[in-house]
Image (spheres, rainbow, N blue to C red):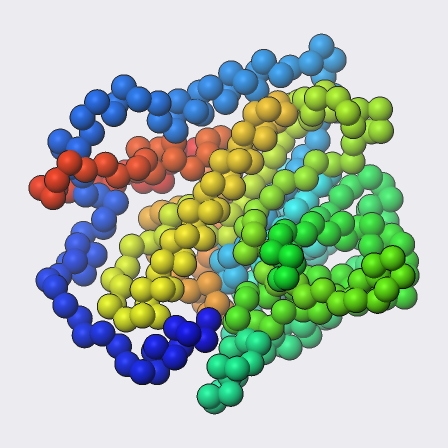
Length: 408
């Protein structure tokens, strides 16, 4: 991270070339080459995968249907977690929100996951966190050249205090109680040195009732949202065969921005096909953000180009993970439900700026969708016409206005 900053301090490249489509108000997603598809319409596309997936799901039906379960997966997305919070609060208002059997979360989704797992009693706190907190309530920026040689650009001590305020001893006790009933809560972090995702069973940690359980859970929630280089890694003490060591963990979204874990599985079924205990169950996935980033003009400067490219990579990785979850649902015979901020919704482009008015807008959008019955789609990303790959045979393009977000 320091190298791009050094380049930025040295100077920046002068703009060159003519206006871009985005700069003159033409969304790149609306540009097509009428001659660009050739024989490709006869080739398999993502929509075909959706149809095949449905056939696979139906084929998994066991002779005896298991008890229907509900699972919730929450992605990372910083301030865009306000959309997740609003959808869940609206779901409670609609009177149809289930008591989830298993909840998973990453980054901001990990914070939402705890409150969602504990039920509507925590909706007021969820609304407060995602409609009233400001950037200074989450982090403070470090200043000066010495920042280049430190472990982070910002200090997330304010976020640690917010987590401590929400995750009280009473919250830990309730989490332990729900775990003992068979419900499960998992969050994801990334082992900085191992460079692999780590899934933590927060209910199991709470249920052990050890003196440091609350402190460990707070550390893990902070780590799950510790954006590398922006926030410092979180040190987690571990015991390796009697030797006390320290791991450093960062944002779970570095390795997986959303993931699924099943609810408690009976011992006699653990080696059986998953459809025998999951068929007919529901997998709800709520993305903190859009499926595709909004187009925006990118200035020809090192940091701007790098930031735009990394953002594009994260969106693509998230879509791939959502497709993986879809295939997991089909193989297990589960019903797949996906929600994300609609493409046409005017949202901020920054997930690290916590502006109460912007977050309230996203919160209310999630709430509006669930109350209107339009929140969920049954298909993975890439199955709508506006989500397919761009193919060209030249540079003579035409504009075709985009349709609204994929049918739900």
